[in-house]
Image (cartoon, rainbow, N blue to C red; front, top):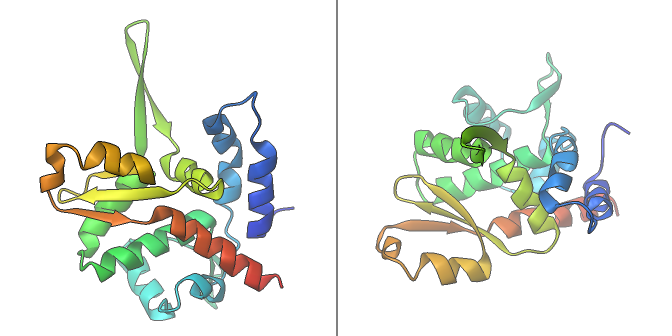
Length: 197
């Protein structure tokens, strides 16, 4: 099967989570599924009613988004779950009035996270599938929030941790945008169920 429905993604995620493997190990296995383009613009509009071809084309010209073109001449696009989550983030950040360049910076930080491991005093830098990890956590019912500070630094928190860690420190005096990341996954799941009724 090359194109999965969202329900199939969800079942694959549930099936792959077991006690012998870490959650992140399973995220690595599932990542290609989350990147498979399978949602049309009409499917995306079930989650984001205000999304239009004009917005998509404008954001594409400004290098804010990508989308696999199924038919290059007709211009049909398909989006992955990751693309759809990014579209939801973009729409919310535009509602807050953020400039396109700031949103690009935020999306880059969300998509390109790295971790450093000290293996016998040899630092090894490896890519962390941060976005995929928190999508899977949200599928598994964790209430994940995305916090963005005035310098476009991003932090993912579970809802209860955000209050415990972020707001009890001096950082709280800086402006912050809090996005309900888990609700993006909920919207995608709901739209998918309606599609397959």
